[in-house]
Image (cartoon, rainbow, N blue to C red):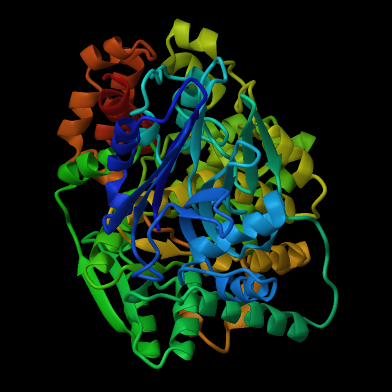
Length: 629
């Protein structure tokens, strides 16, 4: 069940035509069914991708008492146990769906119902008794939820995607300059911001209650610091038990199911657990590219052969310009992550055979899989006073080397590390996740744009402040993991997976983000995550009897495409069109000479400006589609 929208308009009765327009915008999220609820000032709607209870799972659904109605997106993996508990209290059910369990759970426990859910979800509930609208988003932010509160507070509009909200009358389309600065700095927009002023993301693990023309947001979950002690073998057994249960629960489906398989340790672990629990061959899906440093088919084929899956591979060199335009239809906010493309293509490949896939996302953020965690450890040595004067010199020296065509060569890694050292050490590992420095912005941003956003690396309306404060309570590298869990994972990785899978009407489930596994991972000591220069040490030790050493110990590569090379070939015309001086002048945000200089340096292979140029292209594409209407 994969797309929701609705509104509470205190000015008058709900308008069905408006609700229909909103719901039509997200048909790709649920092509199997649509449903509407209108009562007084409230309208709720849903687009359904039928996964569980194919016959009676129509939405929206009402509680047993008929006093509360829900529109629901997601899956609840413990709904059978919850149904048994509610039945023991005397509740009767009309369907076999998890949606009905959720709304009856709300009837029984009020807003505390969220604490009992194990799953991914975004939902809206109209409570007729209290005349309130309740919105909720799952703990990790796997499913999206946006909202708009009218300035006079007389209406609240919500949806799975911004494009639905824009169908509601009177929604402004003004760009938020601070959100734009975040996008160009990070390649994603952190919650609660969106690129539109007044439209917000409900943060992961939060409730929103709209009543009497007022909204109140409440955080109902956050991972807490704590250190487990004890025998390593016992901890590994506990981890494997949690993992097995998380995978088993996510294999519940009344439609065909498979898995993404990149050949990395995360996806390989998920597939191995699926194979152990299923009497049938598991269907797995991978893609590769002609440029071998970007293709992971060697590893995915190895794992598929080892586990005996029914493996489908595609080695693709797509019409990348057509693909860019396709993806622009589904991203209501630009997202600079290059892995959008392969994730979309592997989703399209999987959808030819299945409706649900399991994915390995989340393992890097909870067990410590990224190279920037190593960079952060090294920086603790280089950040001391005697070395600081050499940071700019190192950056200028590495700047002289031309970028490598390879995905991650030693030159590219050293250049990225030296650039990160020039960001303030107070930013912790974010230093290696920023794509524009304050100096870059002074050259790139127009005077008017500069006046609207400060030049701090993370600017004045800082949603990271709370996360930095809470992270300080965690030991060692767990601080960096916490920051990534609350920001990069929720606002980049999970956005990418949701939009690209839903664009293909495919539901993606993420077992490693079962909240019990997340809480377990954060209770482990820091040196269980990154030990020496070994990332994911505990995870690798726990899986060494299940997966071959070539998979366990392979270098982290990431799921990406050769866009830095394609900007010189396949995507060159697109770049020259969307970053032309005339278009840049029309935008009013940037200095065209600086952009033309970056284009020349990139085309001449003097510097790799792919991240900056690609973000500017995406912003221009987005603006023409969503803002200039």
